[in-house]
Amino acid sequence: MSADDARDRDRESALTNGDARAVVSAATGDGGGDRRPSTDEADNARGELATLRRENARLRQRYEALRTGRYRQTAVALAGLGVAGLIGGALFPPVRETLVVLGAIGLFAAAVTRYLTPERFIPVSVGSSVFGAHARNHAAVVDELGLQDAAVYVPDEARDSVRLFVPEHRDYALPDAESLRDTFVVTDDELTRGVAFDPSGGGLFDEFARSLDGPLGDDPETLARQATDALVELFELAETATAETDAADGRLTVRVENCRFASAETFDTPVASFVAVVAARGLDAPVVAEVAAGEETDFAVTCRWEVEDGDGDADGNESSVDSGSETAREVEIPVTGETEAEAEAETDER
Image 1 (tube, rainbow, N blue to C red):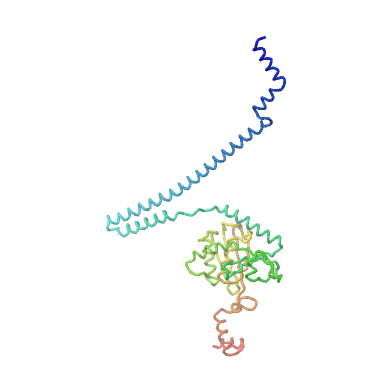
Image 2: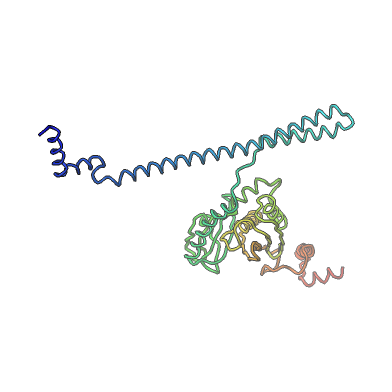
C-alpha cells in the first residue's frame, strides 16, 4: 500500500471520529457564529451614525456661511451705492445735496448690516411646545392641590419682581412677601395658603423695561398704552391689542386678536401674564388677572386691583361725580365744617 493511500485512510478516520467538527468550530468560533455578524452590523451602524453627524455639522456650517455671506453681500452692495452717491455728489453739483444724503444713508445701512447681524430665531411652534410643558405641569400642581381658579400677581418691591399667587381658599388673604418667595405657601393663617410661581410675563417685563425710552407709567392709561405697544410692536405676540381702562373701578382690559403664542386656556398664558405684571409693577399693587376666551386666537385679559378710598366709594364703585368736583368737596368741607349736603347746596347756589 502506497503512502498516499495511508494518508487518505487517516483523513477518513479523522472525519469519522468528529475532528472535522473541531476544525469547523475553530474556524467559525464555538457558539459564536451569531455574534460576529451582529458586531459587524453594530460597527457599521456606528460608522454610519458618525458619518451622518459629520454631514449634519457640515450642512449647518454651510448654511451659516451662506446666511452670513448674504448679509455681507448686501453690506457690500449698500457700501457701493453709498460711495457712488458721494462720488456723484462731487461730480454733479446741482444734485449734490441729494446724492450726498443718499450716499450717507447707504454707508450707514452697510455698516449696520455688516456688524449687526440678526439673532437666531426659534420657531413659534418650538417655543409653544416648550412653554406648554411647563404650563401643563403648573396647572397639574394647581389642580391636584385643589386650589382656586384665581391668579394674583403680587409685586415684591425688595426683589424688584412679581410673584404669581394661586390661593387655596375662595375668600383668601395675601401672604407677606417673605412667604410668597416659597413655591408652596404654607402659613399659620389658612386663608393665606396656596402656591406661588415666577410668572411667565416676568422675563418679558425685563426685556420690555430695557426697551423703554422713558419711565414706566404709574397710571392705568399709560400702562395700558405701553403694554399693548409692547405686545404688538416689541414682542409681536399678537396682531392687534386694544385696551380699556377704568381707574375709578380699578380695572384694565386688553383685548387681543390673533395671538401668536399659547392660548387663552394656557395656565399663566404669556400675554395675560405680561399685562398683569406691567399693571402690578406700575401701580405697585396686587393685580387679579382674568382671561375670557373668544374666537380661536382672540381673548380678553382683565386686570383688577383695589382702589383707594379717594378714587371711589367704600365698596370700590365709581363715584357719580367727576374728580374735579370731588376734589373741591374734599378741600371745602374740612374748612367750613358743614355737612356734605349743605356744601353741595352752597356750590349749586354759586
